[in-house]
Length: 425
Image (cartoon, rainbow, N blue to C red; front, side):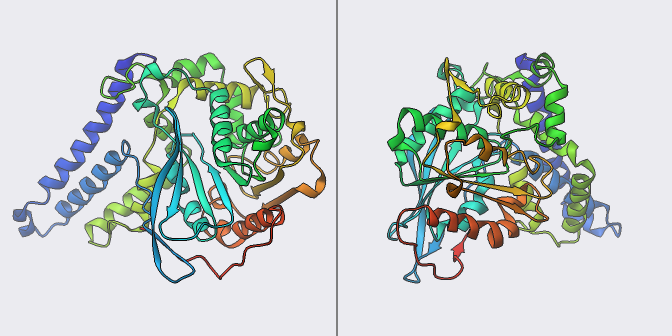
């Protein structure tokens, strides 16, 4: 399935479904159908509207949608998004509150490169903005990166993180969410040995597969069962002629989306049906709960094939991070070299993607770090998404992470002024 026409066929199917939705919506919206007592034309228009929106969102990068933050002076401070470091496969961006004094905490959010854009962490960014200067890794869609930019595997990813941390300086507090946790740990270990002065102050790892064998999930079971040859033949395609990255080998976002949806097909089918009925009754709105969730969930990006394949082979199959044998080039990275960076682990009790114990394994790997600089938290009843977004994150986990940062800041604790006041759309 490495041929370009396969990728183009998937894009053609998506485009056809978007067109069918638009056609059904337009056809069923003619005023003449209002004379019919039957509701079918309303239902057809609603189906078309929901279908068109769903398939059109799949190729669009969502906006951050964070217009302002309320400062201590009670004024709205507009949020400007500044690019700090720009690289072919990803950028480091800063959410700068215009006219507001610098916050004492500097936080680097390491977003996953796992099919969705960094905007998946929008609510995490919003929750931190009032009390921190927030930076995030904004990974680029591989379909838009020319072949001339070269490869991008987990070693390149790790070195990108190293460069981002160097750019921000040693007063940075790193928070890695899910997939990048193992490579963030490796990046900090690299700095500990190669450039100790550039190490971050703290590192919080949230629900990441440091040791996938610690407790099996459907994800780890898949990684164990399938061979690399099967993965390469069934998952890897070449970007089609429509995009700048034509010819680049990728794990397509549309293919990833099929996998995401198939894991909870019944739930997604019911959500689609319920939205069609709500839309036909005039009860749906542009920013309702369904649209807010699926506008983000359906927006997928292509991953570089070498990054996807090397992640499965080295992190999940060979467990190079868990066994502390990860190498960059021909140099082995020793996680035991981390001696000064405080490390906190956050896991969810009901996480079915990175089960409890997988991320906690990082503390055992940090053999050079005193226990006083280690911390962990298991959030009761929380699933994977809940430990970095939603009520569990806002009410329980975020305050613990901020307290952990403050305890290891080496400076006086910043004064908090109640709950953060953020306006986001």
